[in-house]
Image (cartoon, one colour):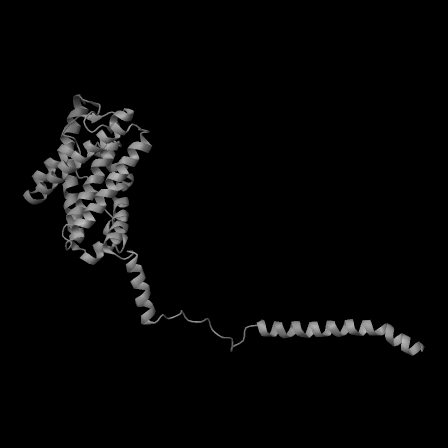
Amino acid sequence: MLAIRSLANKQPLVAHLSRQAIRLQHNQQNKRFLEPTPLSPKARPPKQHSDLTKKVAFGIAKLFGYNSDTSTAIRTTSDYYDICAEWDKDQLNFLKEAHLPPTFNTWFHLTNLHIWMLTVRFRALPEPLGRMYVQELINHFFIDIESRIRNNFKITQERTIKSYMMAYLEMWRGSGVAYDEGLIRGDAVLAAAFWRNIYSGRGVKEEIDSGDMELSPSGRIVREEEGIQGQAMEVGIPIYINSLVEYTRSELHRLESLDDEHIRRGIDNKTTAFGKPKLEF
């Protein structure tokens, strides 16, 4: 009876030790299975889609207009425009040396110049792509102009905003015609167009930063430079304009060397990686 009772008392301990032994053996097996071996399977290769699956996927994308010419034009010209609009940020030294004050009007004219260079290349695309790319690029430009007028200058009156937008629209049209004429008739005509637009035909006059007044295309406050300083500026302006003409011709040639597919899809940043004018005295 005592032996039976002693055995009964030991049964829980035996069962516990048995469970521990089983758990330890299980862990060792799992550890062995988790260890890398020469026979471990390699990662699965990327899943290959059948031609039918690709055809269906591309068809759905086309149905929703993702790869349409219009959507491609909108996406691509948005990237192009960002490069044009931010060009002046990396050219502060040139702006200072060329006596171009960091104002809204300077930004407008320099951005407009780079947009014009792109439109020259876009017009060489097959129709209707050329017209489409030009239109989308100009849309980005004027949407940004209105946004800057509202946000940067805190102008809220719609009538005032409309008057500014109409003024910049006329400036864009006029400069485009003048630059096109200079492109055809030669550097002297192009230089004259730059002097009338980028330098506003003001010769040795220099803008004064006067807050919101700088926004007005026709009402900027300027002052006459006198004496030796004014004479130096007057002599220097043709040199600065010549640098812009050389820079523009060089960039137009570079854009011309890129094939239509490169231009249409904006394959890499080289398409719009505009350079820097060189000032040589």
